[in-house]
Length: 322
Image (cartoon, rainbow, N blue to C red):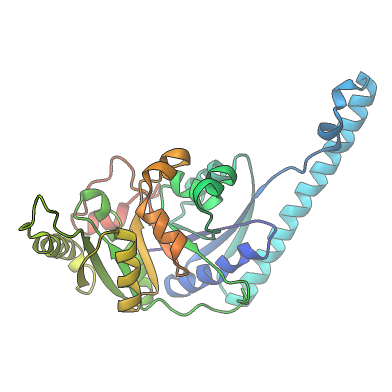
């Protein structure tokens, strides 16, 4: 269950849209929220002007001044974050803490997840694609590649007031391909659906028969795979709905099915590829994230994670405190 929730923020209004989703989860799990920000030092005049050309005395004097300014900026950032957490606690009645982090963003966030014993990250995400993604990167991408807990990525519209409560999730769609890897999304998806009292839909997108295998009954295999997955979580949750579709492109089939069943969120396992490997090989989860405006729950299974076999697995996926 998602009871320890981390919301990564930066200095933009954009990032605050994730707060209302975190509050919605905490409302239903009596959860604790931690607001975090990774402090990024401002570029210094010394770096821009080539300070190493100065005399040692001048270098020391300017460097000391910059250290003092950086210390004050860090203090102010921590204070601002603490004030936001205090205000949110007063508005919601939840326990809300704050933490200013340092270091490489994704690494700092993952280390904080271990320290906080986090169950989930909730954050706003841009949806860059292609070479823009490679050139500029994305904190959400980097976090998904490293995080050992699920990451709920939301795509806020510019005209949405971040203080508004989001609609409750009513249907969660979890695409599966029949592999043990994809089955690892069952635990995060069940926890999200259970928190909101939502329906869980399991989806299999079956490619059309090829000329080489015109009689292959892939649809039957897809149904059997979904039925097996449904049995693995039926003891702990209402029986999920099963949906099998045929489509050339998995992402298109997933998005069409999400619209047809009225899904409010899509939950997927992801390999977490990065850089050129992502761009060349492609990623179904990445394409879904880029093409939809609904929240997407992503989970990168750890190499040691095995297929779900009952509630013992549901209780312990990827959690340092389990």
